[in-house]
Image (cartoon, rainbow, N blue to C red; front, side):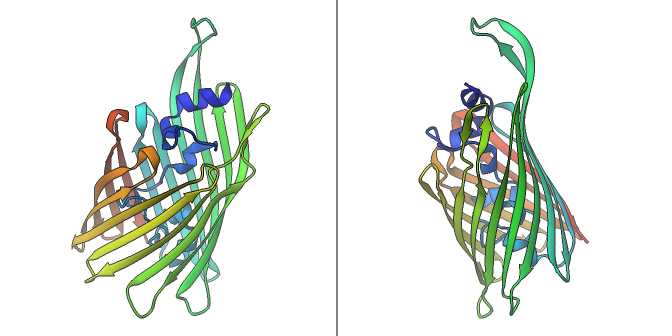
Length: 291
């Protein structure tokens, strides 16, 4: 019953109608830029969003970065992310917080009569570390995440880990990445334990003419035995303005999306719009600063 209630409250379950995993909020991307590029960010991750897509990318940061994203998710739910990355001579460290909230829900008993209301939410706290390998062209990283879900008076918690590597070619503007996300025992409500959405991703990115970025990801969700492809483009119209478009073939939630990015000195702002048909539209706004 608890899992059924979870699926009703959180439409992210539409990522797969026959999903075999729990903690489906871990499938929601954190940043407007990667979302606009079809989530093809495994090889490209070079900002605080690397905490979600590939922790190996944190080592690319030469400056401290603070970033936040607010997402108007499906059916009135809200998804928020805030992250901080801090490069040092010992490697790059990152902290992240994500939360999916459905807000106040109206309770119903077995006879469909109104009862006291309740809240529902999913939260993840992330600590990441990344370091460049010999030669500085490659880097590796890892995250540890504390996960917590609440539905009224019921709650569940778990711990998960992520692993990732990136390699930047020195002879041409191309990079490659590989990540394994959400490694853990799963979430348990009462006597039922659902596996985490363990995901393996491999990606590549290539820059043409210094202004056009192309990225491709292939992702495999192990519990659901689903493989999807994401493709994204980013065109730098001006040094301060970028236009983005992408396609994510993530099951029934796949489709086209687009967005725009602005840079103003140390400040960055990104916006993404993604239509999901009858489920509604998703809008993301990201703000960040580097110093």
